[in-house]
Length: 202
Length: 202
Image (cartoon, rainbow over all chains, first blue to last red; front, side, top):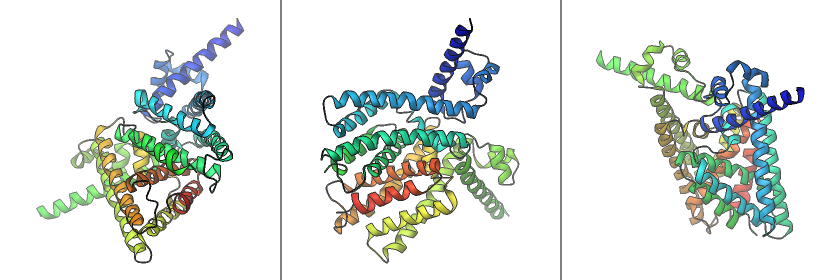
């Protein structure tokens, strides 16, 4: 019985995180209330606090869940692409694939890490630290692939792979902001073209 | 008398915009209430609607005022710098000067256009269009200076100046998000170094 109860609790917690990711992506952190999150997950508002101590605590958990989901997707796509092409080309392929996904589904949403960085990093120290960690994880994945590209002689070597990775990440996040403002993935695709076909290559 | 009254109205409107810029930079759009804006400008909440039809209308006016102030500052700095150096070098100098200002005062604030793009462009069509226009204005200033750099033989010519300008703007905005997350201007300075000393130059 205890095991079943624990499994139920975990299921509801996961459900809260899933609706949280969707709501925060659509409306942002400040515009999303606990009542709304609870309603979307089919639990009474009061029960929310059985799962999370506070909205801030929930925000941190949402950032971590989103990062886990997203890095999982990126790594799976990268693994698939590297079966067919070198790791630098694979990185470009995956960026284009993710952008295509944005075009189809999520032009209005953007990346939760970027939008939460804009909105919450000053107000919540806990969320800021979670975002810092998540972003470092993504930058690490990019740096690894760019370093491998350098070793294969595909990527320029006059700039450390970590610095190139940071530039790619920052341009990506900036272009996702413009995607929301222009309601188009054109800004994202243009930056990817400039970066992967001109700037990063040897 | 009528002229004095009109001048008073304009003064209060400007005061509302000034406190609005400060509050929105610090807390974001959704977390800032009309009561708070009115209190900070020393007017009763009800009077707010003598100046702006709605919070959204106020948001658009804040975006426009911020853009006017910021482009004014950038153009003045650029003009001063181009007395001493070519327009591409001047652009780099001004980016570093603005970053230094962020370091001293506003690490926690970032750029209002980027943070509002993240927070509001889906919820308010009016704000989205105002942001689009403001960002286009900045990108135009960058493109002009990069084109001039190309004509002077200082900037690479294999990529159109407009595309380079967009990449610089996007990387700038992305690095300002990381500035907020890392509580440091190091990400901004690193991108500027990579862009202006390696990637953009011939």
